[in-house]
Image 1 (tube, one colour):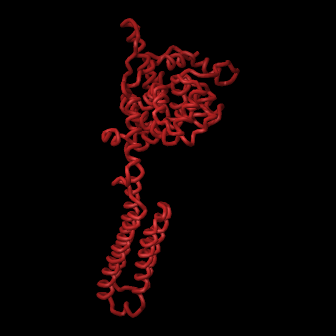
Image 2 (cartoon, rainbow over the protein chains, first blue to last red):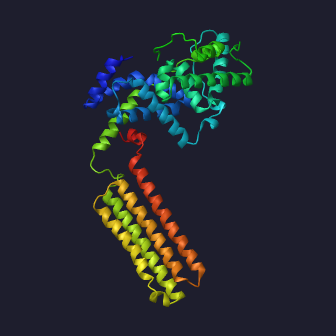
Image 3 (cartoon, rainbow over the protein chains, first blue to last red):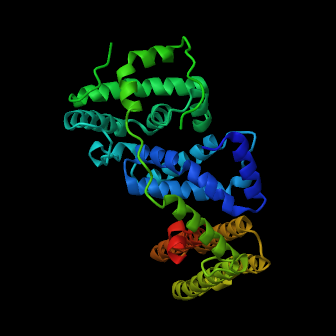
Amino acid sequence: MLDPGQEQDIIRRIVAGDKALYALLVDAYTGPLFNLALRMTGKHADAEDAVQDAFLKAYAMLRSFDTQKRFFTWLYSICLNVLRDRQRHTARAAERFTADEVEATPSAAPGPDATALANEREAAVLRALARLPLAEREAVVLRYMQDISFCEVAAILNISENAAKKRVYQALRRLHGLLREFGAAQPDSHR
Amino acid sequence: MRTLDNTPKASQHDAAEHEFSALVTALRSVPVVAPPVGLGERVMVGLNAQHFLAARPAPSLSFSAREIGVAFFLCGLAHAGLGAALLFTGFLAASPLVWLKGQPPLLFAAAALFLISGLALFRRLSWSATLAVGTVATYLAVVLGNAALLRASLPDSRLVAQLAVYQLAALALGVLLLLALNRFQNEPSHKRYCHEA
């Protein structure tokens, strides 16, 4: 992972014409961006396309990037915009993104029983996640699956920090309700 | 990506995170998926291809203001020409008096607007100006054409309706043409670039 100083330097040099350096940013952020897109779309192919689109758009707009800000929040914003556009264009809005469509993600769990249980729980969580409204899904994916601070979630979503917290809280409540609906493999939670 | 603040705050949200701690844990424990092999390379290939195409002179799918102007001019000419033919036959069939009531000048005014917009576009106006001039000219032509028909008080109302429908259809076609040109011009697919590369 690049530190902010390195990133700023790389971006300045890219803007000055050293296009090949963009590969460093692509290498650094392909993984996080792909996971973000995968959790938002539930489809590997869609996630790949979205990541490509996001990187190409980011490159095209790199001159307008304020180097005093964090690159990854800017890049994530672009990626989320791409995902929203794609969902709008392909008429696969959040409501139509059904739980059954979520592709299983291979996990590296140990023994067979533990694996089965973990997979069942993970599948339930992903199914519930797919049922969340888009805005809430974005917030919860950023906060817990990308492990991004509230301050940065707020910056990415272009809302206040309090609004980000509220959105995540609403998402958690809704997710909890959905997992109750699903019944099986629910994280043994609500206290 | 693990970043920044996880300092405890006595907020409603922290209480919520505690309340749903098991759920939060479950969300955090969803495994990170490795991106497909070569995804980063594909991005760079797409980027290079985009630059390669951008550097080529006048790609065939890109339309200059002049070409758009010509398209507009031809559309306008066809519109005015067909309108004239319809009016000519319709009015003549309806009443030769129409010619004496001074209606043709209105039609010619509409046609002239199209000519003006077409000629203006030859002067390489910007895309937005092209759209604005073309739209205004089209609307004016429709309004003037309809006014001409109404003022002519044709005995055959079917002809009036027919011409109104024709004019609206021509307008819709013009708008669709513009949208199609705009889409072609502004939204090349990076996938196409990848394949071409």
